[in-house]
Amino acid sequence: MPDTVPGPDGLPRCGWCAAAPDFFAYHDSEWGYPVGDDIRLFEKFCLEGFQSGLSWRTILDKRENFRAAFDGFDFRKIARYDDSDVARLLSDAGIVRHRGKITAVINNAARCCELVDAEGSLGAYVWRFEPDPATLPEPQTVTTSAASIALSKDLKKRGWRFVGPTTAYAFMQAMGLVNDHATSCAMRPKAAAARAAFTPPA
Image (cartoon, rainbow, N blue to C red):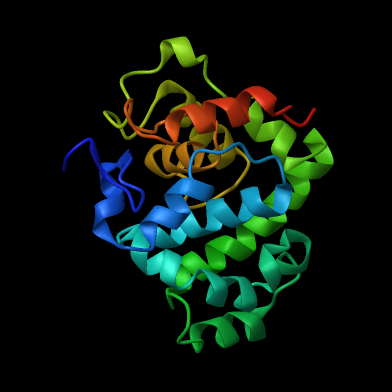
C-alpha cells in the first residue's frame, strides 16, 4: 500500500483511503482529530472491538445501525442491558451479530461507569496515556506502542474486554492521541493544529 493516494481534491491522503470511497470523508473529518467526549470515546472502543477480525469498512458502513442498536453508545444505558437486550442485538441484521462482542460492550459499559466514577471522565482517563510525539515512530509503521500496551493493560485490569494493544492503538490513532497521518498527507498538519488547539479533559 502506498503511503499516500490522491484525494478528491488532488492532494495526498493516507494510502488506506484507497480501500473504499467513503474512507476519504472519514479520514478528512474524523480520523486523527482529538476527541474528549466520553460517549464518542466509548463508541470508538466498542466499534474497534467489533472490527476485530473484520474490515473497518464493514464497521463504518454499519456505524449508524450500531448507534441505533446501542442507544447512541450511552454507556450508562448500556450498562443496564439484560438478556433480552442481548437477544435483541443478536437478531439485529444491521450490526455484527457476535455474542462475545455484544456482551463485551455491555460489560465494558458497566466498567466504564466505574471508571468515570473513579477517574472523573473517560476522556480524562484516556488522555493520560497520550505519548510524547517525539517518542513516536514514523507514521503507520507500527500497530502497537508502549502507550497502547499500557492502556490495554490498565483497561483489562479494570475488567474491560476486547481492548488488546492493537485495538488500543487503533483507538489512539482515530481519537487523536497519536497523529498517525502519513508525513505527506494533507490532513496531517490539520490534525496537528487541532491537537494544538485542544485541551484534554482534566
